[in-house]
Image (cartoon, rainbow, N blue to C red; front, side, top):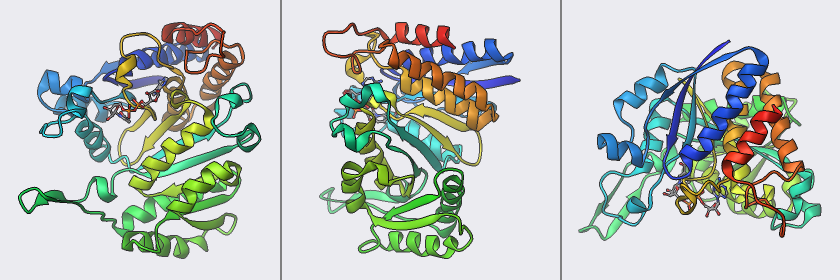
Length: 353
Ligand SMILES: NC(=O)c1ccc[n+]([C@@H]2O[C@H](COP(=O)([O-])OP(=O)(O)OC[C@H]3O[C@@H](n4cnc5c(N)ncnc54)[C@H](O)[C@@H]3O)[C@@H](O)[C@H]2O)c1
């Protein structure tokens, strides 16, 4: 198969981890007889520097014309520390999500036996935890009307959800649960927020169409506690944009490192695959960042965009093997043991594939 991939490294450690993901993709292509063709596109601070726009039209065209987008991360301290800045790298991220119609972000959270000790939680709590967060990505407060009034002393972000936005992601979540352990947890704040009440109402109406899925409802404050108290309770979680953003970072602690969690964003046009971490500017250019989340995102790309399950599995197996063999970056290395560089881990994984 010919794979047309938009390569969007972004900022900070983005280029370093995407480089390693590309090695894994090429290794899989060589093994299974596919060919990958990459087109480079700029999004984030690097796009602002080049085009004065965090998501330039040319980048959008490249993404639209590709079969999948392999994404790194965006963000640069020079913008983070300037609240008055009119253009921001994160606008690029929001724009690519909106314009590609990427309404669902799928983030699997799993544990690796040899890394259980890395989790800040007790091993017996996290051993065997295996769930998927499905976060709504193009609605809610991040995209609602926002602004200032009263000479800037009052600020507002409007949380808006339309029924169709809720129903399409719930459908995806019900179907996803049906292919896993048949348990869906709808996370909301229906005791306070009107948007959450609409989410809950829609989910309750749809439940009957999915009799094989056990559905339960949990307030987000409770969910944030249960994720830590009993992560094994969860199979599939579905929630709105802001809650999902926060809960998935919390969930990353279960695996032990931000550098391990991959994600797929799917929707109306080309799907996008990215690690859940940011641009980790402190590590940029040092060849120390963990590339495994980006490499696992490439595995999701094979599975979701191309339906190539064996190819995805080959990447997953190689990643697990590198962890078992202790070929890991400093965030995962055991005390007193050697930490490998970003490129050494990527080379090892590609060779193993
Ligand atoms: N999707 C995205 O592109 C995205 C997501 C979150 C944050 N950001 C941006 O990234 C910048 C930095 O934000 P932040 O510091 O809050 O989040 P971050 O994810 O970049 O880093 C947080 C911490 O996680 C760890 N970490 C992250 N990635 C890692 C990796 N690959 N290997 C090892 N450890 C890793 C590090 O300890 C780091 O200090 C900001 O500009 C922010 O806006 C972008």
